[in-house]
Length: 326
Length: 82
Image (cartoon, rainbow over all chains, first blue to last red; front, side, top):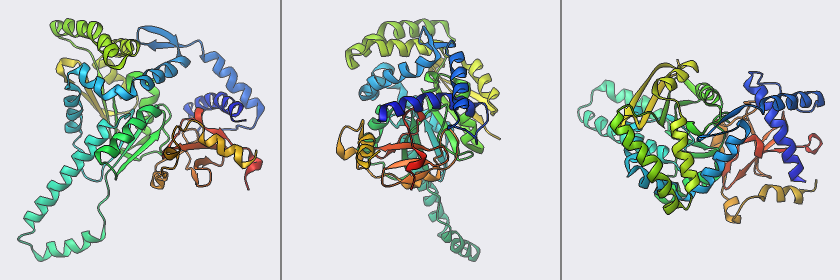
């Protein structure tokens, strides 16, 4: 009984997603047969559109499924492979993201494509150390208190400090399961939630988050513009969009070394460590397909972000893009 | 559809039975909306789903993690509502 429901729902939702994208949010008439047929015809028209899956050109509808399979297949070995392929440098890139973000206690983070939780764990560590530092500072300064400060402290005692919160959202259930398990092992309990969701269709209310991150994820999204618009929607005014992604190496010497390493070494590592050549072949190809720093910057601006800038890491192997919703 | 069938549907795809017993963190409801209508959802404890009553869509919660991908959701018959 469930299966036909699901296929029906799938067809219906595919159609209605597009309606939502078109900006007609509040009214989706799902019972009317005429609406259904118009959804279908819309769908049929868009099936011809193609996109990139690594160096392959595939119909748009297939990319999400193919990407899903890649990450389903690598989920268990994801962390080990990251260390092996980047020789541990990915840790430095992720630390750099947090350093630039500099989140303060009480901040709310949406960690999109957050899979195994790397960014969210760092975020929680960072805000905790910030809070500890602030507390130490306030203790030190309160050794000589004025009457004013004492009266202030009564007021501030009444308002509880807002808890920082990280929400990890990933379309891949396998990656989230690995991340949730890791969180339990590492002892991250409070202020952390896990949600299966699509970056192109976020299941979060408008104006909710102080920071939106997508680390090594946006490359795998079928409609990047759509994901950027959703990021803009869920951020609070003043909120910050941050993206960590492979980018373009400009130095010719470094570039040729990087190419040799990517195409000769990474798929071999993938085969040896994760038993999966194809997924890592895809990884390397998708990196080369992704727009360079300036092009991606323009796309972020196009989505409505202000003060967009980027920082190259490791000679542009990776770039951090940042923009604000005003 | 009898309740037994329903129960079967919800536990589909769950590997360990312990996994499905993980509690849902209801404070998430403050953040979550239906990805299609962007409207708030209702937590249905009995079936462990997040419901969009207006559109009749139920999003499953598996191992404490809500699955908010419309393609994985379930359509509810209007007449099934109490």
